[in-house]
Image 1: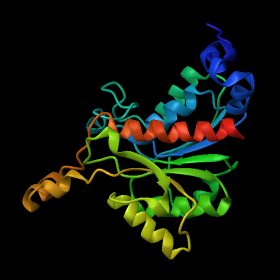
Image 2: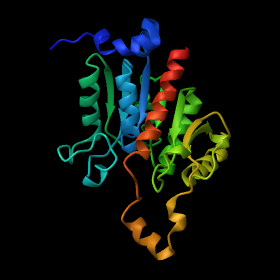
Image 3: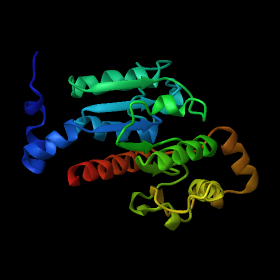
Image 4: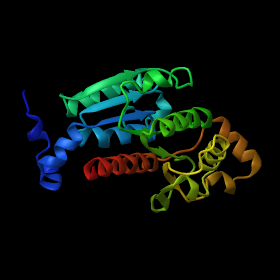
Length: 242
């Protein structure tokens, strides 16, 4: 079945006008990390009609992902998230151009992952070292980035906030990233999505926390998605305002 791009995005045109849709179609957004947060960020970006998308993730789907990751189902177990993401993008936007990298992010490969350079990026990585390396690289390249902080161990959707990294608080991941970036001379200028809800680990007894931590970080279905969709929405607004 041949469906025209404008048919898919007729509701978008009603909101943004044809000029807005053209801006989205001519933009390039990179998404780093395709888990609970990144998968939903990708959903927002792809369905908005962004024409060029870079996707980066080294991992494959595990059963423990199913409770919160849009790419994870019982039918996608053990499949690479980048392959699933590519398939999903093309299923909603067949005209999209995709740059796919199934690798773990490091200082050595970042220059390859940002070629051709995207105009915008979403950081949905959950490890401090890779996150800091990525953010430093994007900051120095002048690429507008929205960085997503911790989504685990929280339940309240009304506590999600968007601030410059210098104004983040409460979130341990944001604190660690903020501290490491300061060592590199970066004190502000990076947009962050974070939760001001204290992580639930603080209400657990020490032995309970150790037991839970060894099983992985607790998470709920909606919190990662809200953070990811918010990040996608901020990027889309920036594209439309250009």
